Length: 179
Image (cartoon, rainbow, N blue to C red; front, top):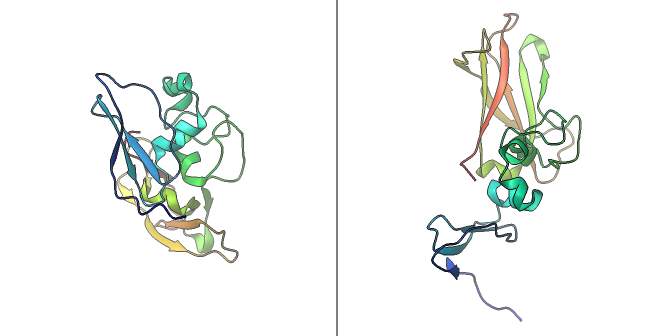
């Protein structure tokens, strides 16, 4: 039997001081920022970065940014936790070949990333270039593309540089609201 439509948000816990981690199904988020209420809200199907972290790390690990921070790489595969969230890999299981790929078709610098479509509403992905590793003044152009063999649930992001042949550095910057 159908129980009805979720209308929320709902207060699911209340007290003088709330701490800890609540794990909720994908498509929902719990906000305890008030410190006195836990509020459950439907997010429309996107998994938040905070909810993802809560399912991947223990309560103790969540308190240690060296393990669960956005740039931390607990499995040593070269991908920080925020990138693992975006591409849909496991932060404690090393996986190669899932991160950004750098190519130069027709001499044009290009970075390609297959990102979980549901993660893209939670992050900002920007392609950047510069002549040194300190300043990143130039944006790369973003186009979304469907590869020859599309992967269900993923969006391919393609960032292209504007200068062929010039020696430059390129990177992707991925930013998420604080979990």
